Image (cartoon, rainbow over all chains, first blue to last red):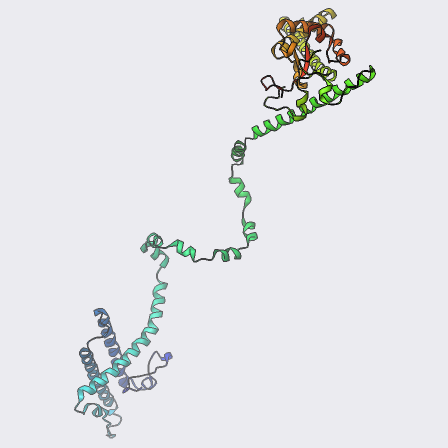
Length: 278
Length: 162
C-alpha cells in the first residue's frame, strides 16, 4: 500500500483489502482501515453536499479548506496508527530502539498548510477512486437486489399513467418510419392462411341473411322474369317467322298445282296488303 | 300470351298488315281448338262437380248426348270467337301466331260481324282451307263476311305497323 500517493490497487477477491495490510496484525491494520472508511464517508459527504447544492465546481477556497482538513486528518490518523503500531510492537522489540519517525518528515516543514493541502488532495483522489470502485461494485448488486424484490409490472401498472404516455406517442410518425413493404415481404402468407380457422369464421356468419341481402341487391327475381320473358319472346318470334315462311311455301305450291302465275318470293308479291282490293 | 314491350323484328316488318296464309291460320285455329277443348272439359268438370254436390250418394258422371255435346261445343265456340274478335280482333291462337281479324279497310269487327263470322266459322270450319286456294288468302268466312286475317305482331296497345 502506497499511503503517500494514495493510489492503491486492491485485488478484487480480497474485497479491496491490501495485501500487506492483510498479512499485518490487526492493531496495525485497524487505524488504516478506519481511516479509509472515514475518508470514503467524507468524500461521499462532500460529493453529496456538492450535488445537493447544485454546485458543479465548489469555490476553490472551500475545496482547499476541505483538503487541508482531510490532509490534517490523514496525518493525524497516520500518526495515531503508527503510534498504536509501535505500542503494539513495544513489548516485542523494546531494545530495538530504532524509530523511524516518518511522521516527522511529513509534519516538520514550515509550509505545513500547503503540504497538508497537497496531502488532502491526494487523499481525496484516493477516496474518489475508492468511491468509484465501491459504487461500481455495489450499484449493480444493489440494483439487482432491489429489482429482484420489486414487481415492476405491477409497479408500472399502478404508478404509471400508460394512457397519458401512449396519447403523447405520435403513432403516425412511428408507422411512417416502418418499412411495411419489407415487413409484408417477410410474411409467409401460406402459413398465416393455414392458421386461419375458416370453419369458425363461417360458423359466425349468418349466411341466410347474407344470401337474402345479396338476392335483394341483385334483384334475382327481376332477372329471372326478364330472362324468361326474353326467351319466350324469342320462341314466339321464331314460330311466327316460320309460319310466314310456311304460308309462302304453301302459296307457291298451290300456284304450281293450279298452274297460276308463280308467286314471287319477295314480300311485296306474296300476299296482298291490308286494304288492297280483294 | 302477349309481346308487350317487344318490337317487331326487322325481317318481319314487311309482312305486317298483309293477308295471312293458310299455314299460320291453321296453326292458330288448332290452338283455338285446344282452348275450346279445355273450355268444354272445364264446363264438363263444373257440371260434374255440381251434380256431385247436389247429391253425392247418387253421383254418377254425367253422360251427355251427342247432340248436347255438339250443341254445347257450337255454343262455346261461337261465344269464344265472338268475344275475342269483338274485343281485340284476335283469339288466343291469333295472339300466339301474330294474326288479327279485321273488317273492311282494316277496321275492327263489330259485334254483329263478329257473331256472324263466328257462326260461319263454327258451322263450316273446313272453309278455312279455302285460304290456300284463294289468291287473296281469304277463307269462306272472309268471303262471306268480307273480312280478312292479317299479320299483326303488335300487341293491342302497340304501335301501328311500320
